[in-house]
Image (tube, rainbow, N blue to C red):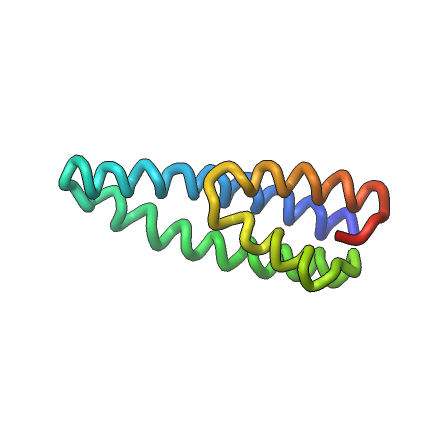
Length: 100
């Protein structure tokens, strides 16, 4: 389970930072009228989020999370800063051997 947790933690941080970059890219696109950054960051974030989903499902199955808990952690990668909070809660939960 420690390998699944390590993979999840890494991807939670990567997706969190990627989402923040995506927000910056959206501002540049819509306020600065320059879509170049968005053309790069958007697809990269989408690809990384897909990997985050796979690693989260893997951890959820191994830790026997509820469907609701799993869905909330999966959605955490779509709201800026929430993936960092969710990562902390998941680590606490897994180390305490509690299901989400």
